[in-house]
Amino acid sequence: MSTIVAFSVSPLGTGESVAPAVARAVKVVRESGLPNETSAMFTTVEGEWDEVMDVVKRAVAAAGEGASRVSVTLKVDIRDGVTDGLHSKVAAVERELDASS
Image (cartoon, rainbow, N blue to C red; front, side, top):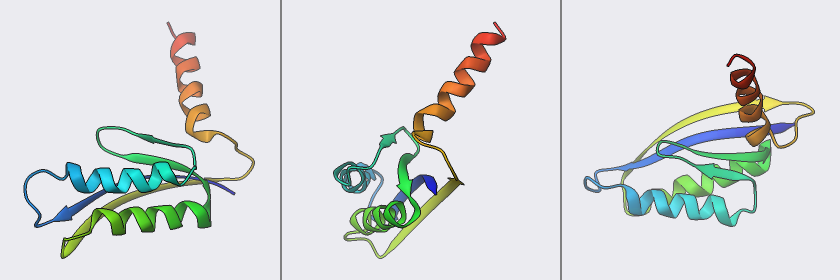
């Protein structure tokens, strides 16, 4: 089944900026080879459940290096028969917006 996971990870107690920790997490995601996107608030990755969750687990570990506590927000969409849901879901919304203009 196709799985899309949007997640945000933040180490706690490491100072005001979490950019270095987030960059470590995003690097893990990008090196996974799975389709992914990063925005200001979330990193989204798509694939099969086991491979996506493995990437999330490794990204959380990377972000948490040097921290005694890590906060993770996770949203998951699991759907049979979908390919490239990362982009097709956005395209469907854009078509609706164009139709209502």
